[in-house]
Length: 289
Picture 1: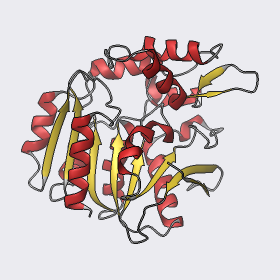
Picture 2: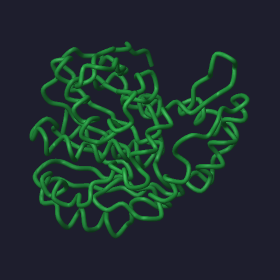
Picture 3: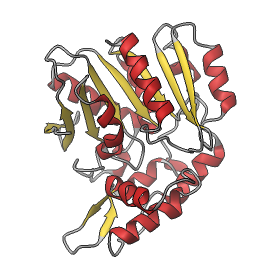
Picture 4: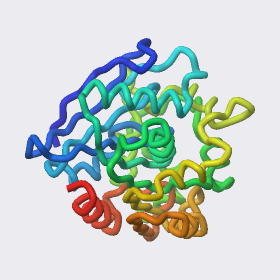
């Protein structure tokens, strides 16, 4: 689906950031903000856009240091509150006062923080394989692969690298799936080699004493969503979000709430899986329009 590239200044004013702006069929259609995970970029939502496109205006950013957005020369700025400030700069620049939100992994953590920073900015939330408790096994796995890794010879090698990292999460993927995954996750260099489309320095936010991506206690942020419509998606094989946490999220939420477990998928669902797309479309039709 066609989109316009929207270029804007980061909240700090130092960086040029980029977001995809997918138009809706109707000018008055609701807006959805789609925020990707730690090592991903706006292309991560391409499979879902095929289902949502035209129904809603979709704003899909590359966070700083990812995709087409500039890398930050100060790695200390790769932190949740900075990303959230960038998102408000994006929305304010587009004169978007209210929107629905989909957050995958880190994007979901950002959604929680953004609601605390600006209550009422969102009408409804979809959390993709993320919640107030981050399982240690999943965090350790992410810490093990994010960061410097060297360029890959070509797209076939990139697909193999993506498979080596994510095979347990997508046991049913074939070679075509891994190539598509690589093309959403990586970028080709001028010399023809392929690299992951993120600044390796983002690893400083998830490892060692400088880790900043995961706040110590997220339950107060979750509780602040109490009356708002929420949909939680969990990969049945996820090592980051447990079924126990999803059950507790439901228990602590008095407003409209739904959860769906996507079979034979780990962290995180692509969101083109039938149970995921069906739930997302129904959820936004009811709560956003």
